[in-house]
Image: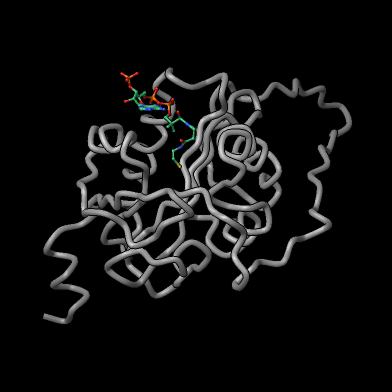
Length: 210
Ligand SMILES: CC(C)(COP(=O)(O)OP(=O)(O)OC[C@H]1O[C@@H](n2cnc3c(N)ncnc32)[C@H](O)[C@@H]1OP(=O)(O)O)[C@@H](O)C(=O)NCCC(=O)NCCS
């Protein structure tokens, strides 16, 4: 989940007009429009701005870069929204994960911008929690729910991510194992690649035809 400079290729096209949800009031029914205290759901391209606001504070103001630029957020939420998960408090996005599929053992620079529909590896591009909601367990809970959800997707064998050294213990507590240094670097930044086994040997047998 590195911060990096905008890619020169594979750039997603930004949408300028997103459909708006317009609440419909049915005559004779005075419904209270209370938003749920907590809601977990896949993100949509309409959530891209909220995602990017969290990224801006979490990454751009810190290092000048972020794991996914706005057009890339929109792209992934258009092509593989089912691999995202948002945590909303009273309708407001407070934490999110964005993933896509990857089809090789190790992550490469290409993995940062591509979704490979035939892949069996979920590449977790970014986990971020809104500043005011950090250190409350939300990042851990959201990742735990996401990993449980991945178990329900029959085509997923494992989940991988890249993180800086200081977050290795955080992901280890969630069940990720260190795979070694990532071949992806961003300027002076280096990353550790980590893996979570969603399925074991049964998956390999079934999908290798043995
Ligand atoms: C990293 C992040 C997702 C963790 O979410 P969170 O809800 O704050 O974390 P939780 O409350 O579930 O867990 C707290 C644990 O996270 C780890 N952690 C969080 N931020 C950390 C940091 N900056 N350095 C080291 N460990 C950190 C620690 O292990 C901490 O436990 P401790 O307080 O006992 O030391 C969140 O802090 C965040 O969004 N940070 C900015 C974006 C980011 O760096 N994302 C990850 C890389 S893409």
